[in-house]
Image 1 (cartoon, helix red, strand yellow):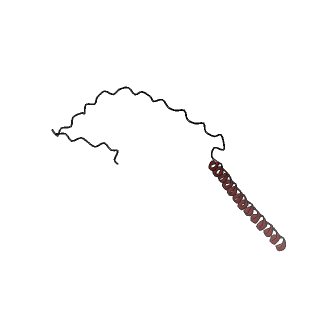
Image 2: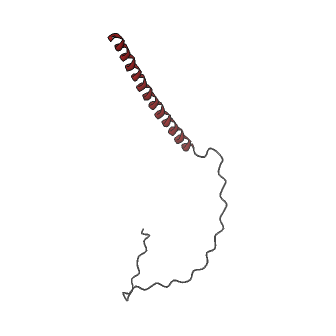
Image 3: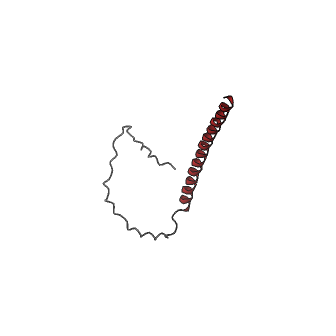
Length: 90
């Protein structure tokens, strides 16, 4: 089904503005009131997605801090070893 309006074929071949009949004013229909929604948990998946995002952020933070701690510890070990070597050389 196509929702594109197809042009009307005109016998004269000239395109003229179509004359439209005046429209009657629209009268809004009476709408039935919607039934009340139950007041339970609104969306459980939204809470689950938020929890997963929080856990992912926490994981990234822990991995980043662990890498930083390892770099600092390795640097400390190298400095300590270098100080020991310098003591032996003296």
